[in-house]
Structures are given as C-alpha cells and as structure tokens.
Amino acid sequence: MDLYRALRPLIFRLDPETAHNLAFRLGAVACALPVLPKPTHAASLRRTAFGLDFPTPLGLAAGLDKGATLLPLWKSLGFGHVEIGTVTPRPQPGNPRPRLFRFPEVGLILNRMGFNSEGAEVVAARLRHRPAGLIVGGNLGKNKETPEAGALDDYRAAYRLIAPQVDYTALNVSSPNTPGLRNLQAPEALKPLLAGMLDLRREMGLERQPLLLKLAPDLAPEDLDAIVEVAVASGISGLIATNTTLDRGVVAGALRTLVESKGAGGLSGEPLKAKARDVRRRILAALRGRLPLVACGGLGTAEDVQGALDDGAALAQIYSALIFEGPALISRIHQGLR
Image (cartoon, rainbow, N blue to C red; front, top):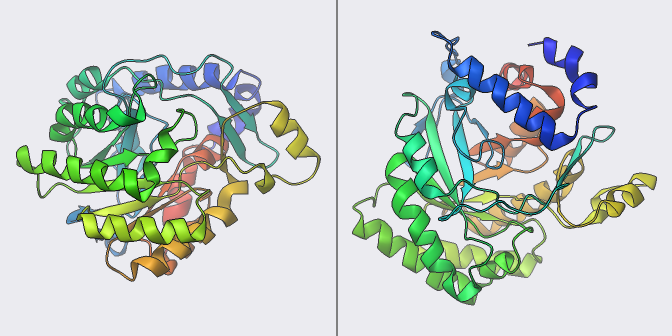
C-alpha cells in the first residue's frame, strides 16, 4: 500500500486523465488475479441505511469508476459500497480534453468531464458479473444533448437497464458540467422528475430498492430547505450531499488565480470540505431524521468521516482524497473510526 506514496511523484508527472487510464489498466490486471485479498471489517463498523446492511460506512463516490470496471478491486481494498457512474442512457464522449486537473498542494481536483459514459447498456452488461458481497449503487444522468424537458425520459431509460443490476440508484441532477442539469434541482422541476422515477420503480417491481438524490453544494439555504421538503414528500429513500462546487472562493490566495486559469469545471477535495459540511448540516437540520443522508464532498480523513457521521449522516463517501493518498487511506480511515 505504501508503494503508492513512493510512486506518486512519478504518477503526478503524467497528465491526470492519462494517469487515471493507466491506473485503471493496472487495476484490471489486479482484478484478473485468481485471488484478491479479502477485506475484514470490525463488527462495530456495520451500518444499516435505506434497508441495506453495509459492512462499513465508508464508500467510493460516483465519478471514479464510471463503467463498473474495477468492482472486485474496490471490494478487496475494503470499501463498504461503491457508487458507479454517472451512467447516461446512451454513450457519449464527454467534454473535450483537457478536462481534469490536479492541485496536489491543496488536495484539489477540477473536473469538467461532462458525463463521459459508455452508455447504460454496456455498463449493465458488465454489472451482471459484479462480485458478490459488495453493495453497488448506480448513479444516473441524462445525455448532454437531451433538453431539460426530456430529462425524465433519459433517467428512466438509464434506470431500466441499470437498476436491476445494482442495490440502489442515485439521480445526479447536480453535476455542473452538463448544461442545464442543475436546473432540475428546482422544486418545480424536481417534483415531476421524482414522481416519474418512483412510478417506474413501482412498475418494475423494485419498490424496495432505494432511490437517492444527489445535490449540489452551491444552492442557497432556502432552496435547500425547499428541496428537502420536495424529497421527503416524494417518497424517495434518501439524499447524497454534496457534488462538486463552482465556487472558486473555496480556494485561497494565489492558487485561486491558477485554478481560475484552467477554466470551467467543478472543484472537489480538501478545499470543498467546509462548504460541503455546512450544506450537509443545513440539510440534516431540515430533514429532522425523516430521510437518511450520505455525506460526500471534501472528506479525506477518519476525523472527517467520523465528523460527518456524528453530524447525523448514515454513510460517507470519498473520491478526491483517494487520488492523493492512495489505497492505504481506506484502512487508515477504518482504523480511526469509533
């Protein structure tokens, strides 16, 4: 595990997306090994949320394994759940490169990937061979060319293929990299979207499968309160908070100018921590225990994860910190959790 830290200077000399693709090729080799190490978790780490039993509250956030290609590896490393995607109904390449930037001096990632996806049919076929004993969520989005008025049709098309192969689904209406997507968070747009998805869930006989909603950290407090009420009234299973932020104010000093020079995209990692925590606390206060919440955004240490759980989150997810710290981070977090 410590090998990652030794190799990190070399890895970070590569273009971020090139490094990502290389890591996934190596991960695929590891997944092909006859026997991957089996993780062991303390019984005290077990959590129940959305009617599912999680061996640990720590999961891998959506965005890293978009196509569900390394599930055996994530299980072996000790994640309690993995959220794959975002998966769009039809394949799309995403935004032009360069579209991914690292700022290791502050643990920050800027991405404008734009829902690059192999499409729901390809990902669903891969999920049919998923490893047993790992909780897998499917994060769903709409295609870029689909207008807001047709968003429900896209989410339903992706759901039909992905939902039967996963343990829960999450609707991504909060990525900043698909034009107009965040407009779907407005209550007047969100109500019919959630109603349409819950109708489809019922039609498919998946009433017991959790359906979650992932929110942005850039919403005004009063908008968060309104969205919480819509979510609770709709009958969905829970919320995930938060996605990446467009707020360059989370970056301090001269580095902010450098970040701004890279152009559009969402920010994740350490600088998002305080903003995401404030948003989660606002949501949790508005929820008053009526729905569970999955904490995501800026989490990178056992203290961060424990703090989110102490605030009232049911589970926690990491992503950016894993890029900077490597696989050993997972065991360090588990060792530090109460």
